[in-house]
Amino acid sequence: MSAYQTTQYQSVGDTGNNYNTNNYGGNNYGDNNYGGNSSDNWNYNNTYNTALNAQTGRSRRSKWIVIGSVVGIIALIAIGVGVGVSVANSHKSSKSSNLSSNSKSSNSGSSNSSVTQTDPSDPSTFVRNSSWTQAFYGIAYTPEGSQLPNCGNSLEQVITDIQLMSQLTKRIRLYGADCNQSALVLEAIKQTKVDMTVFLANYPIPTDGGAAYVRQRDLIQSALQTYGTDHVGGITVGNEYILDYLSDNGGSTLDPNGPVGNQGAALLLPNITDTINMVKGMGLNIPVGNSDAGSYFNNEVLAAVDYGMANVHPWFAAESVQDGANWTETFFSTTNVAAASALSNNPTMYIAETGWPTNSSTAAAESDGPSNASVANLQIFLDTFVCAANSAGTKYFFFEYFDEVWKDIQFGGVEGYWGLFNADRTIKAINIPTCTAP
Image 1 (cartoon, helix red, strand yellow):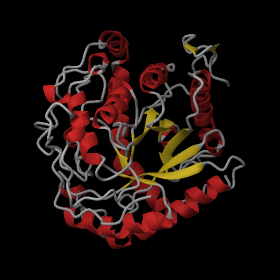
Image 2 (cartoon, helix red, strand yellow):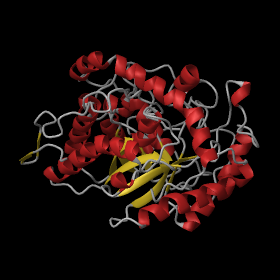
Image 3 (spheres, rainbow, N blue to C red):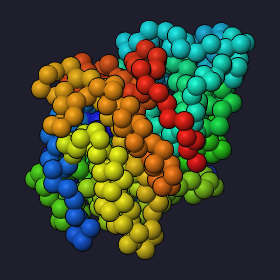
Image 4 (tube, rainbow, N blue to C red):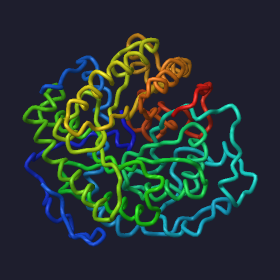
């Protein structure tokens, strides 16, 4: 389960179709021209892996096939979408005209329906909800309309999202950088003047000759040059890359640290190294990490990064909602934290995604077995997981900020219903936990 909407698989064809890791277009970072340089821990819950692969594989694979089919169009779009963003008077900024955006996407109505400002021209004057607390360590987020080739995100909507999320957390994570979402988020943080850290992200594809990686890397670089690093917590390179690679090259039951898993790692590692070199070449100090499904981390990848983010979903493990919080914490500590601590670099581990769906568009997908997708069960998971995880010092990103209508239309089932908020940015009928995250 992912969100860049990144929740998609890429069908891997020629595993030898690697790109030139010594050039990447010869971009100049700071003063340096550079290019990328070139199972003991595979003890996992098979029920979790099987359910995860079965219920999320279709969405990941389908979306990336769509993206791959328009790669020629994307190259043109990347050149042509450098247009000024049109922002309502309530969200004016001297930086706004430098941000890329297209028309509103079809997800929801007005982005301002849930937020009021005492000064309509100043987004930092938004009125806080007195019943909310910053209970969440972090929240997973993708701006509405951030999928190529039809970028439809807007600064106005992202500002509303930041106004809402900043009342619940001090951290968010992205899944990719297309449609200029890195700059939009950082500009929104700047205008709202909130205490928010964002983990930027790059979603590479194994079979496109490096195009997706380079395109997103350059957008991330541009955002860093414009906004600096005060609100940047890291850059995550890859999302469920090894899970996807195994699934498309023999099946998800393969060992992520076996021969096929290591082949996938060999394709991803140049992207990670290149990002590290980019950051260093810019004279910056930003952690670089990787995200994957909880059971599918490759040790060579983890050994190369500063942090790992693990998707850990009790729903896909067919756990009851009553047992979901305990299962999540146990799985994460024994499968991910323990494996990372055995590596010499000891990367910091985060839960990249965990949560509970609130609805299903099909009867067949409305239950994980013992429990249903419902708002009432989301409340149970909130009540049993959030404050306990905070007390335990677990670093997590709750999945996710709001429901995503495009996922329900394209994939069905529970895919579009994981949000704390509805698609129109109104909070669901839940009570936010009263504890405060560290």
